[in-house]
Length: 363
Image (tube, rainbow, N blue to C red; front, side, top):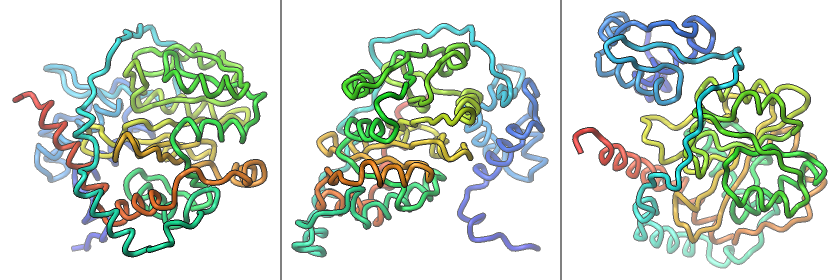
């Protein structure tokens, strides 16, 4: 019998099946409208339990590759090549169900313990300045975290640290120039528009449908840079489907276009696996990935980061290399320790388990 690799042993079976089925769907082996085998039949074919197939199917449903129809089964709803104007109407809301912010914050006991350890280990080194992109220890910790949790593989020079998303938005304008045209989701987080307009950038607004930006609006924009929040756009709560994500990728692959992926709160998804990122799905080296620790550690901690494409590293260094890093060295080392020790991921997993428990049908 052939031994499994170390990687295969670590990956749960339902994740392996999910990845295999997802790839088959993306490759067209299961075209749009295809009915998948029942959970019982698929379980027998793959020699696993029905519950394993159930978890795999649930993940595919969560990410928009398939959908479940009562008494009919599971059907493929993913379209890789088709770009069609959605007829769905966006239902706007004045609120979005948000998990208790106090529960989302890292336990104070963990944070204080980490702070004491960093002060003891680094002593007066915490008073030193770091490179303009951020400290090497911190960026290396982010790099490793993204690789093992988000399938984002980047060089340390692609990672840039800053004091929150708004500051990073302004750096992005510095990369592309104020004469650029940016396309934004409508509605979207108000500060995105405010920062871009203050920098002199022209913004076009693309209306959201039920699964992302309307295809007709995306096709008609003159923008070369698309700013999106594919996991959950604020304030609408719209999540981009798998088909829509690939539509964004096709759009950006033409005419030297770029995407900015604002990955707001995706760590707290109730899915049993980390959410797919546009950065990992695209192979065109044209996605800027952005995230923040303000939601996952503490709202008072104004620390964000972005991963820029390799093709923009030289431009950033030449045009923005004179900027100083806006995040204190001490805070960088504290978060680096949380990432390296596993405390950060244990916290994320705890919150996700609690969310699934609170939203389970039995409650």
